[in-house]
Length: 272
Ligand code: SF4
Image (cartoon, rainbow, N blue to C red; front, side, top):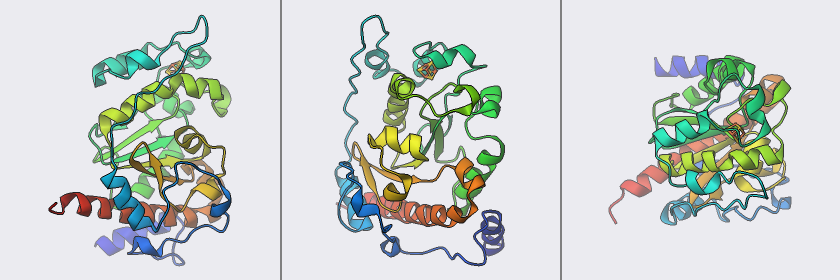
């Protein structure tokens, strides 16, 4: 029955009959261009060693400092200490960047607030703006299938959020200044959730979380360190809907994520 469900999921992802899930994170393949990207947060060594290093060095996120320019509201300082209810309220009423003007509603995030898994996308599209939930519609369906393929489910040990909480007009990429104004909210979400692993979906999420303009191709396929938390980069589901061949690479990334999570949990459960 499980095999049948997995088969159905893999077919949905377009990964059968060619792709078979790996069982060892050590099988992970470095992309050919990965060595060329200078990413300060990359943790060296084989994936499992890096994961254990990340686990052993897991530390609270340092507070962010976002010096506000004259006349701007500095959202970072108060947000850094907010509870979940206060944070949700703050996002609901936020006008810190121009994206507030065209939103139907803010899209805060959804899921288990103590999840081990945190998936971060770019920003709400039209459907998300209308429904107030991230990753709905076709991209959301694909994300749900990607989660199911590694045995996890939206809302169950999984939290989903975006870099910006308001819809950019025409679904454009958020401006750097907009993402910077919204960053304290995501940072506080991460600090409250304390996930074991963050999956950055697409370039906007990867760029903002890792502080690099390197390509997805150079960032995916290996672990990064986000303030002591393991972070993996893969393609955004909306991109995968338009670029079917890259689904296979996303599947590789998910296998690495799944295997790394298993190792992190085993390392945490092991007697000291
Ligand atoms: Fe505020 Fe973020 Fe919305 Fe901008 S995108 S108005 S910073 S909640």
